[in-house]
Length: 478
Image 1 (spheres, rainbow, N blue to C red):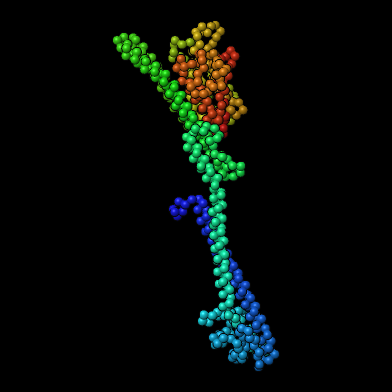
Image 2 (cartoon, rainbow, N blue to C red; image 1 turned 60 degrees about the horizontal axis):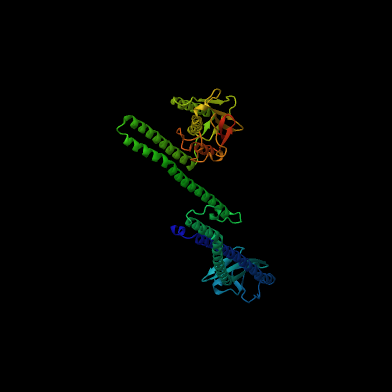
């Protein structure tokens, strides 16, 4: 059947329709032939019964004859009580078999004589001299001829109907698949455009009917949009990465050239090596963040984290942030705290659709950004009554785990907040990458992880308290 799979859908539908129509046609011919044969048989039996009626009455009236048997093709025989034929119009072949015919039952029986088939009916007649028999027979040649001609006519008619049904199936299949052909042509044009059509004009046409083809076109249009968005993200990431990597690579090259020039001065050489090392670390962090963001945007992330693990990750992330603050003795002192209400907790089976590692990555990015913002403040801002603090709060609000990270930094320009979650974006002022940072990808990674878990990220300036970043993660049942 491999040849059938190589045929077009129209050809397969037509062949299948022809096979089904042929089967139904043959069954119909057989059923009609059987029905007509039964009708003709019953009609012949009725005629045989009528043929016997008049001779039987004559035999009862006059058992010894004479017997006036009708002609006109009616084949009859009057058999006496001793089994001899008293009068007959039967063919000689049937007359020779009268003893066998008298043994037949009350029903009509078919008797084969050479090439001829006769339907024979035997009726006993009670007379004053004893039981006599009337034998009636009719040749089935006419019935067989009628059946043969009827069968031939039915087969010819069924063949014509099958061919017509096949032609109609071919036309209907072509008409039904014509929208598919147009859809394929549109897809070829879209593919030939090389993705240059960036709006809905470059999508498949969705028909007005709410049928399978319109659903297919809608699904393919969604696929095209996702593929275009993925291609746009890939092009944008390559462009942004090349732009972001160009500057630190140029800086690293300059620092290495300075180190080569300062080869005779150990102190200057050490300073150049340290600067190159810091630049290399920034390049490595930027590359890691790019890979992480690509992983998140490549597809759905897996993981389920319960409330207790979220709290553990919160405390661990705060410890890591405190270690980061204490590692730089020359920087200003920053207090990193956390807060959660142990009495307000979700149901035991509630989970966040993130792995503990991904939730910890959200915390590390937000706490790191907050510390970087505070370190960017001028030292004159550290006056009496001003505390440099970063606080992470975790609580449950209407079936949602809410993480809020606030700092006492300079906040963020209001005009920058709408684009703060985009990749490679930085605010002017204190929130820059002077202290390392994540190359403009920290908040983008936080937003991507939150969206992957079905949540959201909100940024807002708090008067007198710096910036507040709120991450909402819906709780789902385990």
